[in-house]
Structure formats: structure tokens, C-alpha cells
Length: 318
Image (cartoon, one colour):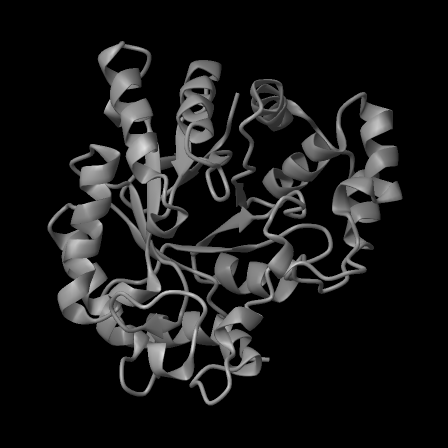
């Protein structure tokens, strides 16, 4: 049975969901249908993933086939960086809703605290970026608040935000962010962020919970540690008769964070869901706590371009 995170209005988000980043066309449709049939009730999407129309087809079929109702599903998506200008926020959400074949989202997030010019794409140059002085996050956030007021999304939040950026929203926004989706796993445990969000009633969703070994080569370092092969994780998995991935998913849930492992493999989709039933021991949790390397797999260094307005230090407020 998958636990839920309860929001102030009583809405409940399943703590375990299906991630769809890097799920290619053809695969993602089958993955979402498989996941819903298996019992997943939370799907995490984003406009930039380029696969929302296919996810929409899978959702629509699952609804019409009576496998699940819209109300039983939790659907999250994200505002991409080229739509931060006030006039672009609503059209971006409307496009996502059309693609997903939905009337509303359960949760809509600002994907990164980075603004790009409308239509700008990679590779980035300084000219394609808009500085935070010219387009502050609060301007974008105020448009997100309007979307929430109108019921186009039931909850709003952010992704890849530092505690300093969250604090700024808490102090200055009309509606507070209810979620921060960030990279979280035993090599990047972010205890300060966890404490901050618990103190301010902001939930966390862990992305790349398995170490994101299938992300593009351009985002990889030559000598990076492979989380799924970590000897401590492997040993704990053996003790419980489960997979290393199941240990990592269970660890995220034990911390009270939502977790969205991505898979298009039907067997792994089932295994990942079964991780919700795995109980780790206090000794397991203690052993995993010792693995923190403060090691990002998604460093954000792609936002730092020559002459551009963003640096890694400013992005993460280090």
C-alpha cells in the first residue's frame, strides 16, 4: 500500500510515483499504462520531456477503460524555462493540459529558477538567457498563483530551488510553494533542505533517486560513482531479498519524501511499486546516512554559459 502526503486542503499525493524524464516516445505510453494497471496513482511529467501527448493518450485510455478515474490520479507537470514571462505562463500550462488531455493538474512546478527567452533552446548562449534581475522568480510565481486560484492546477510548487530561493518565496509570495522537486539519493541527501522544508510545511519530491545512470552522456562525469552498485546498498538489498533500486526507493519514503523512479520496463515498474512495502531497519537507515557525498548527478552546470547571468554558485546559493 502506497502512503500519501496530505496537503493543507486535504488532497493526498501518493508518495511513490512514476517518473517520465528520458522515457522515449513509444515507450512512455506503454510505461504509463503498465504503471496504472499495476497500481500507480501518481505520474510525474514535464513539458520539456517532449512526451506529454503520449502520456495523455495513456491517461485518457486508462480513464475510458474504467481502470482508474481522473480523481484517483495525481498528475504533476512543470513550467519550462522559456515560459517564465508573465504572458507565457498560462499558455504553457494550457498546452500541457491539451497534451495530457486533462482539465487541471494536481501539481504544477516551476522547473528551474532560470529564465530563457521564449523559444530558446540548447545549446545555450548568453543571449538566450534572461537574468533574474530582469525577470525575477516572484513575477513568474504570481502568475502560477493565478492558475491555482482558477483551479487549472490544484497545487503549485517549484523544482531545483535552494533553501534561500524558497525562503524568498515564503517571505514575499501570496501563496507559498507546497513542493520542491530536487535531486535526492544517498549520495546527495540534502539534510539541511529536508529540515528546512519540514519546518516550513513544504514537501520534497526526490528525482534521480536511483542515480540517473541512463541520463545523457553529456551530463555524466568520467569517474562518477554508480549508486546502484554501492556495496552498502547492495548488502542491505541482499539482507532483505530485494533489489538495490527497491532499497533506494524505500529509503526516500522512510525520509518522508515523495519519490519518482523512472522505468519503462514492466518488471521494474512492478518492483519499484513493491518498494513501498519494504521496511528498512534503523541500522539500514544509519548505514545509508553515512554514504552522503554531496554529489549531484544533475549539476546544473549547463545553465552556466560564458557571459551569461547564471552561475552554479548562484543557482544553488552555495
